[in-house]
Length: 148
Image (cartoon, rainbow, N blue to C red; front, top):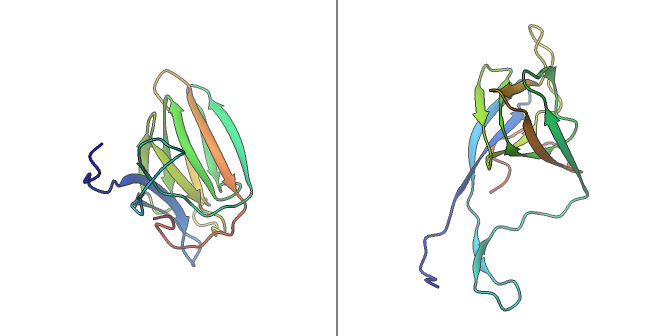
């Protein structure tokens, strides 16, 4: 194995709310990787995150599904397993994600404005979107790119 490999970066979208209660989306990167071993296996890049109580929820959003304005139930990682979906924040930013892409939803504490509060989301295309969420028991931070 070539241990001189460049330290990786993995992109994720962060849906967060500012101190005025408006949701935004920022493209962030996990970058605090270090070479680690699992048992006697060759070293691999790892980026351990702080421990927290968590709850894993799998969802299947049907074709044409739209979740009108709402906040995430808890700070949570959202991983697209199959299909495609979109997420729109209060500032008008809209992103689309497909299999293997993920985001961190942390828009708790939004203040309603012009009928918007939190975010809205929905499926894209002719197949359902299958997602895995990992809800964390941590307080929201109200700043972008919380995870490095």
